[in-house]
Image (cartoon, rainbow, N blue to C red; front, side, top):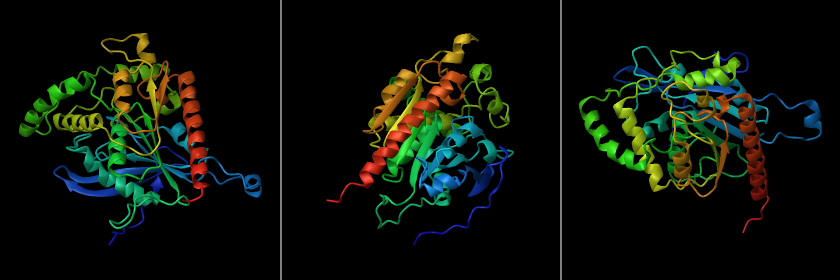
Length: 358
């Protein structure tokens, strides 16, 4: 028997007109009540002329679920409207203990296993109209239903990749914006560090590593990124220097990286956007405005080849870690390449749906 939940109670969101938010009740842990927050932005109705001429937008039957990265939350209005302008319904999920979901007294970003996010992802997909099938039903859906596109940045890209691997057939496509698929010190460094984190977590789950973030990545965004969006940021939720890196959280991340290294076998088509180069942020330098200062992008590109069989990799010269917060010209190129891939993805879906059955 499939559990039914009450409809969500939507309220105006902090992003202003066109955006609404609803809380997902996740129960509680030792720090108190747990919630995740779902934000939505819906497309405008088609014009009368489009309806008369039976013209549809390329993503008219698509729902998008976006998941943010570490020490982050959803605030990018332009990103949402990129999707809704093409007819998609856009949703973003602030995970537990991040952003809108963070409550006083909670440890930001605390998680012991990335699979725990299955709860809020599942509840969000229920709200979107993409519930999990019962145990006797196939996970593959008919061509007449709305399609699901997963869209993740950095840690969110890792979380959604792992989720898609475990939930075969649920997603119709993935877009990954600089996904954190491998540790910065490469796989060998990950394997050396993992036992030490296991030992440390046994003594204190909330122990944290030294804070090495001097705020240079945030400065790089401020130097070249879209001011109209960056000015919206609430620094309680997205501090200039990142939240403290917890031992148990990093252990969960490295476990996720290890699973990627073994191969995920994702069946859905994927697109990955990634900077052309990395830079080590030891001190401020203008070059930090044209590179990924968070991840080692060549290692990420290599690791991405283990995601699945259908992957398009787009390397962007001059991109920051979040390519959609890069300078204007790079950001425009990123949206252009994403649009190009989506047009091809949509066309391929149409061709498959018209194939005669065997």
